[in-house]
Image (cartoon, rainbow, N blue to C red):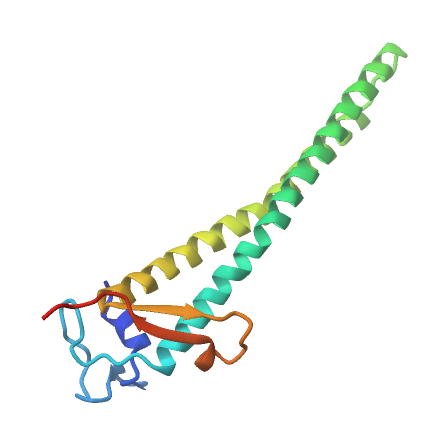
Length: 170
């Protein structure tokens, strides 16, 4: 796991344009191997958790609309192609030869292409946000933390609450 990922959640993170992120306690770049012994979760972590989970929730809410769009426009595109096929047959039986039927087919295929655009954008965004959420959850699990989030609360500092996820026996 990236060290900078740990720092983005820590309250001790500081930033300088010449050196980048560094620890506010040691005034040095992070150099731990697996876990930071001085990490403190607070407002930075709450802000990151709220941001990632809001993106994740927004994408989950878009899923039905995106799939509905996909199905609707595929059906419209297929209907246009079927109508174009019947129109082509009727025109040829009447003894005419025209390129208008190719235009109708191209329009039907364009509508089908349009059907996939939001779906592809959704799947790409979903892939990014899901992996970002998994990395965040894995990081918090590494430090034995879990969280609860209240999406109705607009203030991320009060919307996110931490809790220890594991009980350690001594």
